[in-house]
View 1 (tube, rainbow, N blue to C red):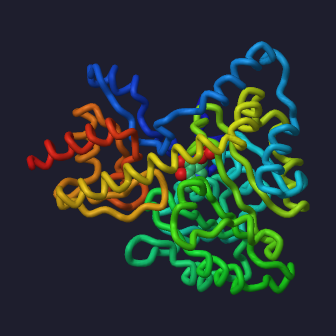
View 2: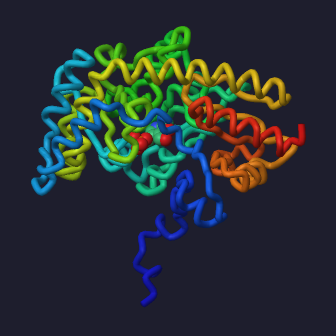
Length: 374
Ligand SMILES: Cc1ncc(COP(=O)(O)O)c(C=O)c1O
């Protein structure tokens, strides 16, 4: 059967998302005994004990379908952020939020604005819906150029994605920059509304340590066109459970609720996330680790004369020169260190490393030094 003939045209040349390789895959493929993964921006401390206990004590209930409304998780989020439940939605990771937004809003004729070198899942969602993608270059230093995003807005602009801080560059926009951007969005003459801004704050808790880093939730009231979303995959150490959450106007949340799969957040994920969101200790411990280790890695990069970009998140983008990013990735892999090369982000001479424990970071630097023969 020639299945290609009946596949939607836009899906024909789709390529699967390239995920960070797993430790077991690399051990098996390269016959290595010891491998560390610094590739997917996970929390090296793992999930907290409190969260693991909550999961364990709910294991016997997994034969039930999950609560379709994630009530207790939404309640916990509502308490943590002091916002009404009617403004909150939950999902199977931030990834699902991007797709839900695409399914809800993107028509074929719509223009969706993204920044170059921003999270690749936005472009994939636009492609899936067969809408028009407008890609805007970054500023020097690989930061989002918010004013340039405004300049390409037209009457067809439906959604603008802003990642703060951005993956993979780690750069961020300040409160005043974001406010200016939101304030200057043009009105659509026909619908009398501004383009939707989807503010992806996957690394929010790490970026809180930066000067003038804005909390997107502060702008929701004034900006009904704003959707803010975050994840439990990063600082909360729950990437394997797949939980994300977002905040928007009651109207937008109502529509998201109508189109999402009924059981999109599984029962263990709901319990784990509801516990995690109140776990201040986990957040503080992780922030402290990343702050200290970032300093260590910056210093070591400087000693090695390797250029890097200052990061507000738990990863660092650094120059792979004199190698191509792919080559440095391959060499590090042979040494048992999994990082990410950046070809798909159009950064062929960069590699992104997730900040690990001190021991992991030392090992990474030792291997990098060996490769650079210093
Ligand atoms: C900027 C950004 N947004 C969203 C996500 C999606 O995360 P998840 O689906 O694990 O919640 C990621 C994951 O790497 C990310 O880096």
